[in-house]
Amino acid sequence: MNGIASAAMRQTADYRVNWGIELPRIHAIAKEFENEASHELAQVLWNESVRECKILATILMPVERFDEELCDIWVENIRTEEIAQMFCINLMTRLPFASVKAFEWIASPPTPEGGVQLQNCGYLTLCHLMRKSELSERSADEFLDQASTALDNKYAIRALQIFASQSEDNALKVKKVADYLL
Image (cartoon, rainbow, N blue to C red; front, side, top):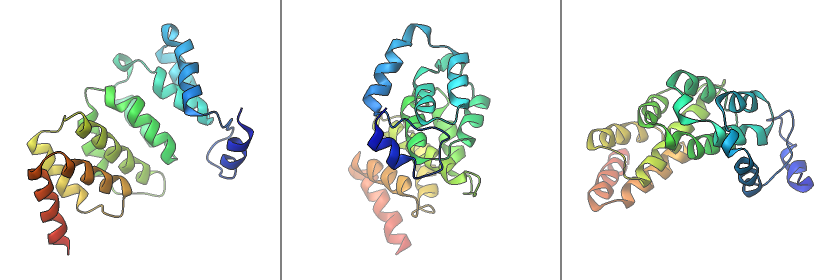
């Protein structure tokens, strides 16, 4: 337990328990379970309202057992930006349907029940997919349309920055969106 980090994080009501364990240590703990990683273990961990359990669940969940229906259930229960980030980098980037889900989520209207984290997960997933150059031209056009209406979302802006940095053509497309909005 990291007492200082835990105390700072406890100021929010995001988790029932928060040990304040740093991410490198959580990854080290996950390595101890690599050979035992199972769908059931990840499910139990995810259902706990404990920060470290949720992060471990995103690392340990076997991709072949994580279908779109379960993905929707998990993402609807994300309440913090940190868990959204961990979910996207540790799990979403390994899924064959990541792009489909990301576009579905960025098109969802934000709601007080968690719709903001849903959009965040969509844009975060797209950021990671773009870094891996896994975005088709058709998908890029859809992304630009959606992101241009979500400029109040810092992850949409970050995704636009990543997209623009990939090529001069992409930079010009982002510039056109910005010019249109001005």
